[in-house]
Length: 264
Length: 254
Ligand SMILES: Nc1ncnc2c1ncn2[C@@H]1O[C@H](COP(=O)(O)OP(=O)(O)O)[C@@H](O)[C@H]1O
Ligand SMILES: [Mg+2]
Image (cartoon, rainbow over all chains, first blue to last red; front, side, top):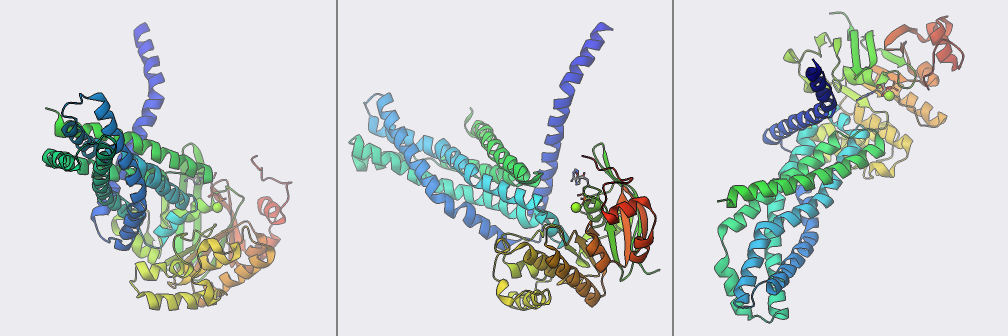
């Protein structure tokens, strides 16, 4: 009797937040299924896709370039100071290459894009929601999932890998700059070591990560915007939620994908 | 079939524990200008959104041209929206599109009209609602409230819909601009022979545009009749609402 009462109380206390959590997980799942379904079926709004690609891609180039060049530079410096100076040239080139292509370029680019694009997306869609523009779309026989969300999801999926490929090059270049001009390595040897150590799996895993991260960023931007309510404050909340949830999910999925590719 | 365009029976809608519509019955005849009045938060917008399928009612029946819209199986929402137009309370113009792209949205996206033809048509309808052609290339954020209403109206009527919904068309406008919008509503509805459902709490607007009036209170239609009948009725709720008095049976929840 006593015990069952205690268990009941415990479950009660647990119940409310748990139910709330499961509810929001359910809502997110429904949203994902709908979004993916509509992203794969016509009509496809190609013009909106191109617009999003430009918005996400083109204007993110400087941010990604700056982030990755400094990441590559700092890794070169740290590797040199941390490892034995014997054979440093090859070690530095290799560590820069691996860390930039496998981790730093995808993760840092995704976090920067989440802050820049994910926030803007949630704000735009949230504003459309609270000013009834999403309702207006429906009354004009246009599905917001197809017109607004699908182009953004596709853009995220396609653009992030391109940005990361660019980030790979810039990041490795950053390492080269520090190696050659600061640490005094021989340029030809540094380039040779980089090319020798180049491996497909590092680059490819990084690009796959990028595609997943791009999808996550767009998804969180659209989802949080879509469910925002109650005017300007609700839109602000949606924007914050989009950035925080996208950033956390990026880090979680980064680990999971790394585990799939590299765990022995 | 009779000439009933929209028929609503025992419509119910709640949000959580809050009941908004609690058994609404309404018949709107073909070609009629029907106005629903009621206080802020009475559920007028919810009623319109249920009719358009933007909200799913909990129970009850909504028939448009005799077709049940709450039953998804033999009913196509896109076909229904193709014969409707809506003027939203805040305009709901798309910020990212220019004025003429807003007005011509249905032509561009659904009817695949070429852009140059769509623009000509948009400018024609803009003129019809009293806007000069050079407004066409502006963006909604560059317009005043009254101009935004006009653009919203142009977007609602460009497809020559059979049914037009107006959600508080005069709220937030000065009395003169409100009167201009009322005239435009009457003109465009008569011109198209459309059936219109307007929701408002602006009595001047009611007197100007309504063929028939119904009052929504506590989730139900508590009275309906013509404008003349409304002015003569002794229904205490309607009397209080029409005279805009704080004294009476209607309790304002603060
Ligand atoms: N999507 C929604 N979720 C929860 N509550 C809502 C929603 N839409 C409307 N309501 C509530 O329903 C009530 C009626 O709203 P509404 O129809 O907008 O009133 P009005 O008659 O002023 O147009 C309000 O109390 C509002 O808070
Ligand atoms: Mg309203």
